Image (cartoon, rainbow, N blue to C red):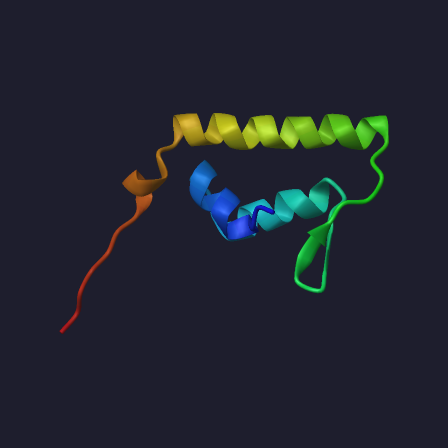
Length: 73
């Protein structure tokens, strides 16, 4: 079982982005779990394209380079 936040961390994207793509490929959240539906060929292709897009984005945009932190006292 892979949680969206774990997948987001591995891909270097936000949890919201992963959740959006999960919804786009036809997964729904029930009882705090992402449940797959039966996918037709078009949905399988869209799923593969979404994963490929996220992996490509990770390789082009290092996530940690975009984070700015500050301690205010």
